Image (tube, rainbow, N blue to C red):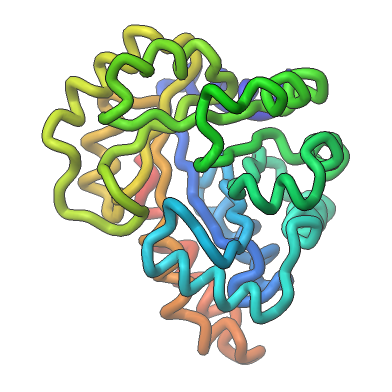
Length: 268
């Protein structure tokens, strides 16, 4: 069984919801990303989205764009991102990983080669936000052959496509809470509750919501109707603000503790 499925089954049995942090891999460097992953798991994270730095992102807001730029300055590659996951696993991390990348790096790396690599690097899921449902058949087929979950995104504007997208979902279905790019928000799409009801009505996979969740109150609101909460920009911003501490050997643990405390406060 895929590790993502095991995680959701365990959480469901205990009446809990998944906390899914997004981290830009290689920000501020690969070694620190490994330590942040370990810190996140200790803080209560259930699944980690490992963002692959990309110079022309479709869905990322300014906070994650800055993180990608920092990582790219260290020449982090797609394979380097997978190596971070392997290193974290070798150092005792048990939670599942989902690789979050755009289609151009996948195409350059080689679709089949990448998905086969995910399995060997013990990464359980793949998320490609700029690959539409209608063009995802080959990726889905190769993922299925390698026991990798291809995680689709569904947005409030999907409307008539919700059922088609939900039928393809394995692992979990990523529900986008707001229109536009990622980033912390005070408000969400006006029809968000109706949208989530529509998704739940047709999805056999767990549903997780992301884009804009930045505090415990927002997470608690969506935990009432979703199986998981995805937090991205707020965590990446917290990492950014603690880089001076992380890069000093004497204060490094202090910086990691601050990040862990922030991630932990999202856990119900």
